[in-house]
Amino acid sequence: MNSERSPARFVLDGHELLPGISIDPVIFGFHEGQLKILLLEFRDTRLFALPGGFVHETENLDEAARRILADRTGLRDIYLEQFYVFGDRDRRDAETQRKIMVSTGTQLDDDHWLLRRFISIGYYALIDFTQATPTPDALSDSCTWYDLAELPPLIFDHSAIVRKALDTLQKNLDDKLVGLNLLPETFTMADLQRLYETILARPLQRTNFQRKMLSLGILERLEKKMSGGAHKAPYLYRFISPTTP
Amino acid sequence: MNSERSPARFVLDGHELLPGISIDPVIFGFHEGQLKILLLEFRDTRLFALPGGFVHETENLDEAARRILADRTGLRDIYLEQFYVFGDRDRRDAETQRKIMVSTGTQLDDDHWLLRRFISIGYYALIDFTQATPTPDALSDSCTWYDLAELPPLIFDHSAIVRKALDTLQKNLDDKLVGLNLLPETFTMADLQRLYETILARPLQRTNFQRKMLSLGILERLEKKMSGGAHKAPYLYRFISPTTP
DNA sequence: TCAAAAGTGTTACTAATACACCCATGT
DNA sequence: ACATGGGTGTATTAGTAACACTTTTGA
Image 1 (spheres, rainbow over the protein chains, first blue to last red):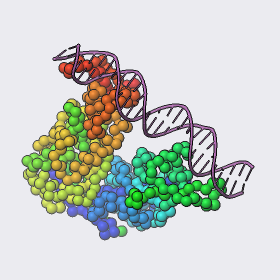
Image 2 (image 1 turned 90 degrees about the horizontal axis):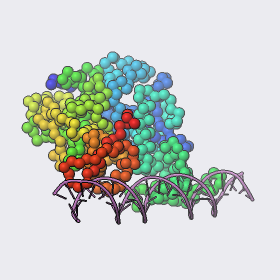
Image 3 (image 1 turned 180 degrees about the vertical axis):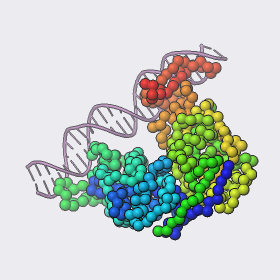
Image 4 (image 1 turned 120 degrees about the horizontal axis):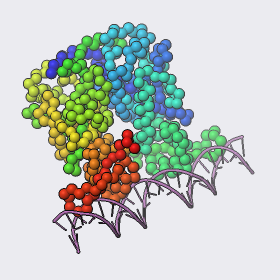
C-alpha cells in the first residue's frame, strides 16, 4: 500500500469544506393544489438547479442540510430526510459547471476543485409554502417555486434526484405526517386530499379518504369556515401536535 | 468567494481514490437458521469492523461497492442496495484508526488522509452463504461470519450502520425477493419461513406464511426431499427466475 | 329552490389472521 | 401406531373500495 499526505484544503467563504461532496435538497412546497419545488436559476444562463451547497468540516451532514435550507427559505425546524446518494462518475459535466462560474465572473482553472468529481447527498424537505421566503444564493438571480409537473430542464443529474425524491415521498406517505409539514396550521379536508392526490398523482375517493384520515387520530376538528367560497362551508382541521395531548 | 486549487491526490494500491469517502457494506448471509454478517478483525487487535473500502476515481459508487464485495466474498452478481450515508463529524476516532494501522506496521502522520474526516456510504448485500468464500483484506487476519444476535463490539459507528441496514431490510422485506438472494437454489418452505422470522425477529404463522408465499407466484414446487430428517418429507421449492418464464 | 360541496351510512369485496383438520413418514 | 412436521380448508376479522344518501350553503 502506498499513500500520500493531504495538505489540500477546500475553502469557501472562510469555511473549510468536505472535498467532493455536495448536498442537493429537494424542497417541496404545496400551493394552490400544486406540488412545487425550489429551483435556482444561475445568472443570465437558462440553467436551473437544485439549491445545493457544501458541507463544512465542522458540521454533521444533517446540520449542513439544515443550514443550506435555512439560507434558501429562511426557515429553521424543517422536516428533512436524507434519501439517497448520487455518485456516478460522470454525473456532472465540467462544461456546465464552467458556464455557471463564468456567468458570475469567475474563471476556473482546469484543476479547480469545483470541476472535479462530486458526490451529491440527496435530502428532501417539506415546508409550509406560506412561511418560506425563497432567497437566491451568490451565483443565482432567482430562487423560485416551480410546479413539479412543469419543471424546466435541470443541470447534471438533478432531474433524477428530483424523481427519486418524489418516489421516496410517495413510498413513505402513509408513515410520515406529510400534511403536518406541507400545509398551514389549519386546513380543510379537501386541502389535505388535494395534497395527497398531488403527491400520489392519482385521484382518491373523497369519502374514504376522510374516514381514513380521521381514523388516524391525528386531526382535530375546529369550527366552521365560512370564507367566500360558495356552497357548504367545510370544517377546518388542525394536526394534534404530539407534544400537546 | 475564495477558493483553492486542488492538486492533492489520495492513492491506494495505484488507484486514485475519492477523498474522505468510504463504503461500508453490511453483508448478510443465512445459515442454520441464523442471520449473519461478515466482519473483519484487524491484526492482533480485538477490533472488529465492516469489510469496507474506498471508491476509485474511475468507478461509480455502485461499482465500487461491487468490487469491495467481490474482494471479500468471491462473488459477483450480488444483490446490493445503498441505504444511507453516515456523515457525523466525529463518527470515526483517530485513535482507533491509528491502532489499526500500527497493528499492520504502518505509522501515520498526524495529517494523513486516513485520519481525517470520512463519510461512509452504507450498502447492504444479500448473498448465498454456501457460495461465499470470505477473504480478509491486507489489514485483517480474519473475515468471518458473525451471528447478528451476538456481534462483538464494532469500531466507529459500525454498529449503528448494521442496525440501520437491518431496519431497512425489515422494511423492504415484502417488496424485495430476499429469499432469492439469501437461500441456496432449492429450499423448503420451512427454510424460507425461518429466514423471514429471523429477519423480522418475530414468529410467523406457518400455514398463512405458506399460502402468502405461494400466492406471490414466484415459487416453483419441485419433487419431495427425503433427506435424513425424520417425519414427513417436505417439498423443495425454487424461485422462478424472472428471465425464464 | 337547486346545484355544488361536505359529511355520514351501508354494503361488497379482499386480505390478514387464527385455528382445526388431514397427510406422510421414520422410529 | 404414533409423534412430529408438512400441507390444506375454513371461519373470523380488519381494511378497502364503491356508492347511495343527507346536510349545508350561496347564488
